Image (cartoon, rainbow, N blue to C red; front, top):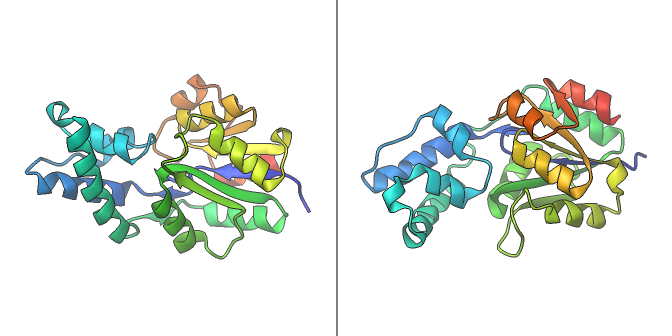
Length: 217
């Protein structure tokens, strides 16, 4: 059995969730008589949790604490019930997870998506695999890039940071890995570009899930 730990981001790494995030956020905007945003715009809005997503989608003059909280509530309620209508697994990701699991690699998820949504999506698309930890955003824990979530998972899984890999599609994930002292792998098929991964100091940058296997195994 392997004693390696792989911690994966969710949105933009395991799953292309932009379709549902965009649809549901635009629904929230329509409830308020506000216009929609495009797919490409939502790719720049995500990555720092639901509150920041909603805030970025709203016009600047409406970004008060109270208004954002109300809009967030409407978004989360609608999104939770429409969470997988347009969401798909990235090509090759399921096969990668299967290979890692069969090799005895410990698997975990660390996402800035709200916790219940994170758990629901993992169970929906990857429920056949054993996950040692699945964490989304919770009130008692800071968002990535704070490294606290990585520290928690490493301790919970009985792993070492020397043999832990954080995999994600954004600078947030890379910074999280660096600050936690674990290996970082940036993926280019997600919501952000190679330049962002490079600028944040990714140890590895990969173009396909198969490339991850070459690094980890």
